[in-house]
Image: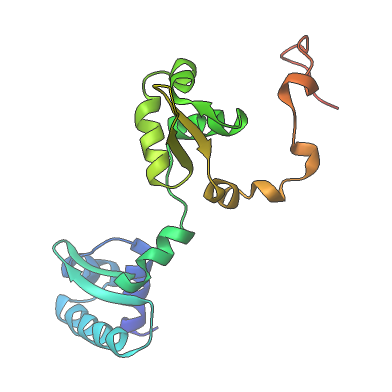
Length: 175
């Protein structure tokens, strides 16, 4: 394995900026060899038609996606949603839309921030209701596409009010 390929693999696997000293330690070679390999690697990436590039940042060297591909990344890579935001999103989806006032009663005051995050990510549409103080919230097409709701089998489409017995013991198993 060449040192160039080893440095490239380390940058890829670490997924964060690394100093020359850190790279030298991981590659088990001296700093001068790492510097030469980085120059060659940066040159190689600069001259090839690649979505990736090796760049020097304030914290070290990193292998990253070129700026031109950032929009594609935001489209394809899953946004990290916290448990609270996921529960808020589920409440909106399961209700088929809900007023923000009702949602806050259901989920608590943290729902305000979670709704804002979900709107920014494009999962929820927030619309001012005519003659009302509260906003109407509902999931967007992006929500359906991202969570592949349309591809769920029909048997998973439950009407919770009708399909689940109210007297089912907690330790029962469905057969």
